[in-house]
Structure formats: C-alpha cells, structure tokens
Image 1 (spheres, rainbow, N blue to C red):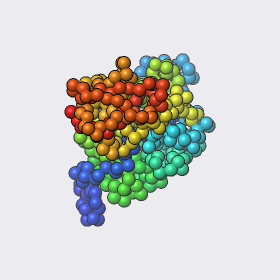
Image 2 (spheres, one colour):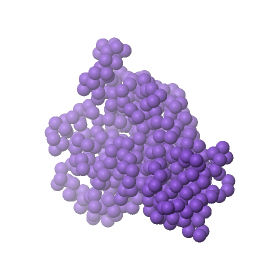
Image 3 (cartoon, rainbow, N blue to C red):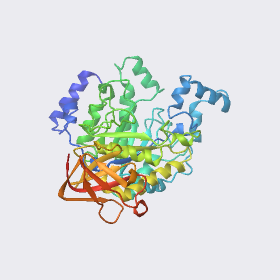
Image 4 (spheres, rainbow, N blue to C red):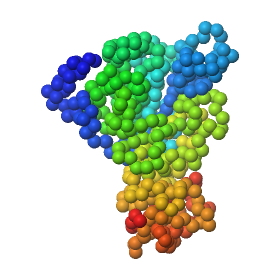
Length: 449
C-alpha cells in the first residue's frame, strides 16, 4: 500500500466513526482485555512440514537452502538426490492427531490459552487457505483442517481455555514476497494477495482471541498493512472486544506497539515492566519444532519451567510454553509430562498465579529464589528451593499484629518470627505438603519493607 492510499484509508476510518483508526496512537490506546492479564499461562504449538524432517529446527528449509552444513549433510546421507522440501509434505500425515486429546492435555496443564501455528515461515497452511492452494494441510499430508479441528476442541473444553493463532507475515521463498523484497518493498503484491487475505480469513472463520504475528522484521509496518488490519480487528472483527495481539507488525514495532510485548524469543528480564509482556519459551531449549535427535538434557526440567513461570508473573508477564508435536500428531511424552507436572503444581498453587498482579517487590531482597505476587490483598512468596534447616528469611516483608503465614497445600498456619530485616518463617515437615518442586507462602496482612 502506498503512503497516499494509506492516508485515504485513515480518512475513511475516521469518517466511518471507528473507535480505533489505523495509526499506532489510536491502536495503542485500546485497553488490554482483562482475561489475558488474568490468564498468565498459555501453550504454544509449533507444527508444520518442518515436523517431518524433525532435525535442526523449524527453520530446516531455510537452513538447507542457505547451505548450513549439518542440514546439508543430513539430507545427503538420508534422502535421494533431487529431493526437495515440498516432498516432505505428503509425509506430514497427522494420523495420530486427536484434537480433543490435545485440548484435554492443555487444560490439564493449567494453561488458559493455546496458540497454534496456522502458518510458519515455510508458508504451509494448516487450514484450507484459498490463497495458498495447494500448499495446505487439506491438499497435502493429513488432508484435514488442523486449525479448525483444534479450534473446535479448545472451545469444547469451556470458556476458560482461549484459542489463538500464530501467523507468519512473510514466507521465505514465496515468489510474490521475493519480488516485493527485490523492489525494496515499494510494491506489496504479496501482502494484498496473500498475507492480508489469509489473516482476514483466519480471524473471520476461526475467531482466535490471540493473533500472534511473526516474520515482520524485514519490512516496515506500512508494507504489511498492519495498522489497517488491526483497526479492523479491534473495530469490526468477530473478536473485537476480546482479541489481543503481540508486537511483531513491522520494523520498529517490537517492544513498542501491541496489546502485549514479546520483545524477543525467551524474553525474561527479571524486573518489572511498564507494559504487559509475554515470555515465550520452548521445552526443548534448542528448537520450537520437534527434533527426533533431541537429548534428554535439551529439555527443561519441571523446576526450570516453574522458574520461568515464577520470575515472569512476578514481573507482570505471561508465559507461553512451547511444544513441538511430531509429524504424525503426537505430543512427545516428555513434553506431555512437563505440561502435566505444571498442571499438578498449579492445582495446588494456582491462587498465587491466576489473576495475580506484581507486588511492591518482585524478588526477595534477602533470599535468592523467592518471587512475589499479590492477589486479593494477600501477598504470595513463590519459593523455588526448600530452605536449609527449614528456616526461610524474607527481607522484603514486614509483619503486622494481624499477620498470618500459610503454605498452599499444607493444613495449618506456619510459625514466623520478626527478623532483622523482615521475618523468618519456619517450614513444616515436607512430607505433609502437597506441593512439589516449588512452594508458595500465603502472607496475610503484611507490608513491604
């Protein structure tokens, strides 16, 4: 879209009396829907043709074309000459994909939203996109509408599990995109004929309450028509009142524009942020997509996951925990185990997480590995390591005559004494506590030091 056409569109929206016009000042004024801030935990799903080679990362095709030696060597040793990346598509079979089973697992994990890859940078669409035929899951491989199946299953779970979609704005090797890029993005045939029609189709058909954009970094937002799409999304779309979007809408947008900021993959600053943000991280530390050759040490432990959760929500963020299913539609058992362990922990300690807000302190000033949240006037201390001698000093907390200290998952109050500074809490017999891996103290009627 030329700048002249962009001004015409802005004028049209203004004359139409739309609440949000296609400019960042207006779009950034939209309040964050509360459900997202309350939810705290989501599940990310990276699934596509890259799940077939399941080697290296989800950038397999790009790395192969760029001559990355491990990928080139892998292909030379295991595949016939002249094998192409699209030849993998028929092997993306999804025969074991059960959307209801996935939805049940995601609910059991304690997550409140799910973000599925509708299309990654390879351009393969997991729904019957009319603008991508035949490079879709309805024409190749599964011959199924994977987005539609999971959307229905997630909504069948109930209103407390929200459905969202990841969508890559660009595609590595799409000729339309490469032509626009060669023209220094003075043309945007790829956007008008491919990207935007797909986004409008996804939102209108599947009604995602999260639109997780990516692949924006090579061109400015006016090339992508980002503000025009977002003004429609917030004014007219079927999810206009509840939808949230991230910050990947063009050069200069990341960390500046969006309902919440992602800043970068695995972003976890450890300090309070002044805008809602999200920490998206992978259970396999080396890849977002499934890797057949992953070793046990590549996977986060449940303690690692809870560290990410505690440090993120204490600083006002949400976590988006990524899984990479196999080409045949299974979530690997080690990933399933981590999700179920997280759900077990949240069953006991969820009141320190869901609907919580940052407290006056994010982490304790005296004892490392203690992170705070607040909820309903109570303060919660998430303790990542059981203290030596069962005594936990808290330097950030001042007691009052009404102070009580409880441990979630334990019957009875805990004893504590005034410290210098703060308080010192006596932990109970660990065998009598339901929680594992990390422990939460409920601090009633305390003040910040």
